[in-house]
Image 1 (tube, one colour):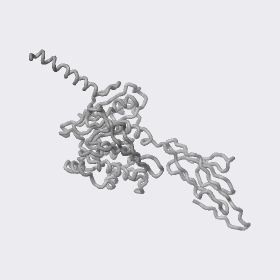
Image 2 (cartoon, rainbow, N blue to C red):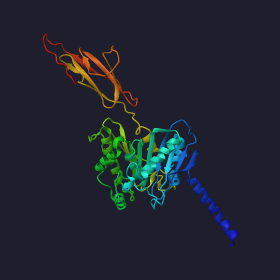
Image 3 (cartoon, rainbow, N blue to C red):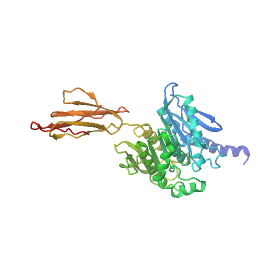
Image 4 (cartoon, rainbow, N blue to C red):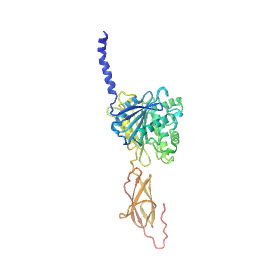
Length: 420
């Protein structure tokens, strides 16, 4: 067979391969730029519908080992979601000079603190993008896979004033290891006690300590980063968030799910969604356990780097959680009256207490004037007290009421109102 004939034979195979590769790369309408921050390469995706001057969310995507910005963007389809939901996505990239496998160095102490190493560089990239584009500072999120997921945990603990929520796919708890050997051990069998690491992460937050919404994905058959690590991420952040919300270890947030919801992808994998709420019923964390999935991005692009298209779409679900109910306060406050309604032998005063920072309004009797609550309310005669609160996020509590029956006392009886 001569060269021309050989070429004609293999040409269809070449064309088929090219078409396969083209089909494997998702199409997007925006602009994908390569940038440099102090020697650190990163890519920025600007959706086609971005309008300068109109603030949009920012999503930071941290790839796993052996990946890069392009392969991770394709695998997660995040640029397509950026077009659909109008946000800017950035992809910091690890260099082989910094780690031969291009892993983020999550296990090294110099890369586990604010103002140091890779966390400082990632935060610097965020600041740079904020200075160049119109970003909504209250909607900045970080997500990662594997080593990138471990680094997203570090970013949440060290820069809670920057990130409004984190997505952790096949990752590890904060400071799961402090050496390379320790890193391998943690990947196979888990890190230190997550309750203790939760305290360590809270201390790393410093004066910026605040509750961070967290969503975790992990495959039950992940033999690269054992599934126990996903459990530890939840337990660590339950402790961290419990301390961050009021400075007390009082289990207002814990690692026991309030909801356990089974699911299945038609023709694909089954999974379990675990929902974690605080004492008021607000969702703080979620976890998706994907049955039979290995070390892959759930619901990622078919043929992409470390993806399993048969699982639930982690990219879409994480965005829903972080940008929706999981990342914002949509729960109205609950106000209690002390003492509660009932029958009392004489006048009393009633204290109204919302369960979160809020402005409380009340009126005494159906014909009374609506007043802002500033001090205990005197109840001198039988009546009904109406009240509700509005929290700082604008959530309005349903109108509540307590009825008080005041019995008349014989003349000369001393009256001691109850003071809350």
